[in-house]
Length: 280
Image (cartoon, rainbow, N blue to C red; front, side, top):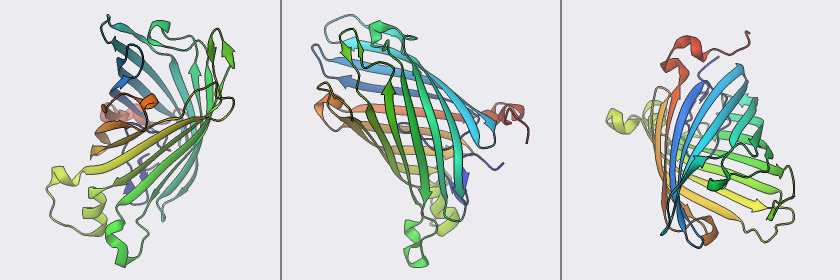
């Protein structure tokens, strides 16, 4: 199998905020800081640790845990793990010529596995999701400088295990993610060499977007969303990204935050680690 993040001539980076359609063998870490509204308002600091593993060439599973540090204004800090997550993903369609890939997956949040003091829900959630990515390397010659652009997107429908648990209410939720990115590596290697130094030529300017909206009985819960402009540095599978977090409304966050991600393929640790669990 070719590199998991390559479709045709396009190398897609691993993104800090939204999920991509690829199955891979990798580990990653994400740090995120954003103040949340409330009385008192509080800083939410998250350290996510994840592991991705291919079961077969087009089928993969991933696991993630999030350690939370909450800093309520005027009060002592709270520490603990959020609920555990697992995702099963299948790459269903790939077109190298048009730099397109589509995958389907299902994510499971295991309710009650985290600490309630940091807000871990006692109810679990299941989220079937469709993922897609498209590069624009197939644009005509007169539009060649648009070829380095690419988009990704995902749509998930989150269903809680229970609508009501104690005083809490849980609606079904539509979860949308998207990105618009421009690969300077693609520009220099596949469009036209413009003399950028190597360190600049490995950059991917990017804007990500997330939007979560209740779609059943909302129980008064508003839609929330984040716009995240930033940059990703890619070097032979190693991806390091940093983005600003800009909430779209007060319910999404109080002021600007930040997110950073380091993504490391397992073959950079050991070649044997990057083989699918099932033989061809």
